[in-house]
Length: 209
Image (cartoon, rainbow, N blue to C red; front, side, top):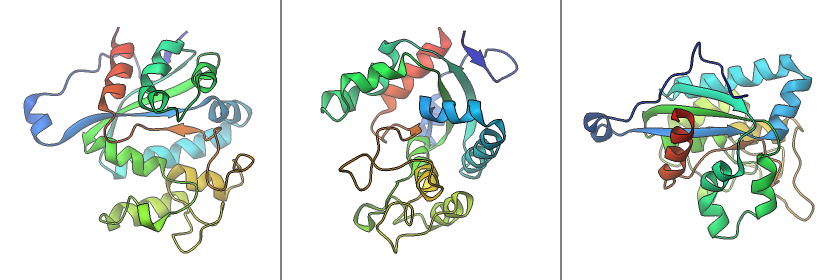
């Protein structure tokens, strides 16, 4: 069964032309099975984690318009990961695994929502050459404060990073895959790239139907 944490199921309305002109967007935050598994074992940690996540969303002036939890069909995840599947970045088995376990999904709304959720997701290990905060000093300082990031002066797992992923690495909650230095498949959180608004629409359509 799909459960909404909102008081009742609400339809996510489309953006008006005025909102689009003002830069409003919808974006999507997915909490993967490995996150949900820890949440189920430790409700206190879940509450603390979600407090950080919702604080970051709020301070970035985004609004949570839907938050659902359940086991969803593989077709939805193939839409969410359409870009990665097409590029061969993510294998079919990884997409399929999401459809066999509980995942949680937030839809947020606000100006530059796709960019802002990418900041919330963050990185496990900083790369100053590709730092997403190079222009926006305020979001960097604010998110580093919320998630306890160490900053960009280190390049090792757990001593650098930003956003949710930097927090997970610094807390020893996730570790790099064998042979990797800055990535793991079991990374708790997914957000679309700034050019993946169509994948957000797929989730919105799924919730609305």
